[in-house]
Length: 173
Image (cartoon, rainbow, N blue to C red; front, side, top):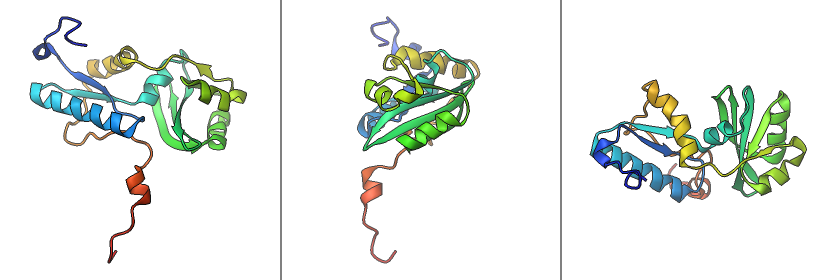
């Protein structure tokens, strides 16, 4: 993207990465690449949640709940009030309905299947978030000087990996 924009890598002031949730491999590769680039160039990193980006696309203020398909009958659910994250969690459908119904909230989704699964909530169906949508959110953090630590930043999986879920306990533990 920098090359297409006519920007040399050495001119970058920061790097923005969507840190998840999403595909384990995709998120891991994206975060690793961003961290490596920042380390090599000596520039700061801003990681943003895919759920936060989606919530910002709903065009509403107040309480917004962003919902993504997590597979296995589960949903990634991010609850935001005026753009501030209250929580992100892995929930089943009934729990998503309870979160949205607890107080007036707009549900924002970008997948038709999720919109169908949560039809009684009347969710706002928006386009899949893209880099430009993430950048708009990240610019506010850059302006405030809120950067992530390269050494401690990890992917935002929300759910544990299959290896963590199905691992057999080590002998003697």
